[in-house]
Image 1: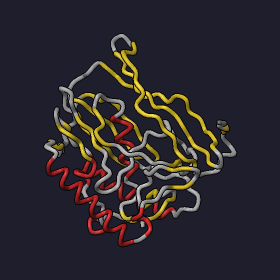
Image 2: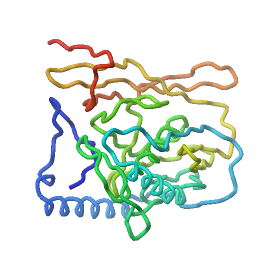
Image 3: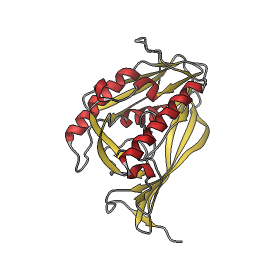
Amino acid sequence: MLFPDILPVSEGEAVQPLSAMNPMFYMASVGLHRLNRRCRLALDGRKYSCLKTDIILPFTVFSHRSLLLRKLAGTSMNLQLNKVKNLRIAVSFVDGVVVNPGETFSFWKLVGKPSKRRGFQRGLQLSFGKLVPMTGGGLCQLSNLLHWMVLHTELQVAERHRHSSDPFPDYRRHVPFGTGATVFYNYLDFSFINNSTGSYQIKVWIEEEFLCGEIRCSVDKNISYSIAERNHRFVRRNTAVYRENEIWKLRQNTATASVEWEKCLFKNSAWVLYDTETVPVEVETE
């Protein structure tokens, strides 16, 4: 029974729904969620981006890359290699997509169901604080990359979900904790809307060690965005340790290099699942 790890946690225990207790309940719950999402998509009135082109838009807005293989204790390297295969399939559906003004980008509308029939392999999926094998596992790395890049643009995130736990310590991490976007077919989606006057294009590809991406635009906006982490800490509450921070977005005028505005996007608090002896931990008192 596999569930995306996005539910609240308390005192070191994941809160499990009734459907986690019985396989039949689980299948029924997933089926209802997926049916509900299909109905909502049919009735929401949005125009979803679907145009892919080999013509590259002229202006690079932001680019990033993330390490494909990580040091994860107790996990099979074959599952990580399968993750890379899954990412290659998903990348083929996303690379080159253009999001025109008024359109919505939807991860699952483009990638589709990650089934064995379509070539997806058993990769790693985070479920209630544990990494478990699942067909299509590992696609969250692509949604994480897309979310991080979108945060550095004027594009507006419409749907994003995050994990409720911090499952393993940082390893060659180059982005702040808590900026990921988990996905679970099809009812936990990652989507964003282009409410600007220019067209944006998603470019993603895989190099030897990295999943790479960039967002390009049809016009030069003369503005840039940066993401700042503030008030990061590890804190112990009773027997559990939590990792907390704030994620802020800043907009700069590229001509004057001045900050025009800043705002707090979200505050994170996640149950830490690994040994915290090597990190400073505050003890919260009442």
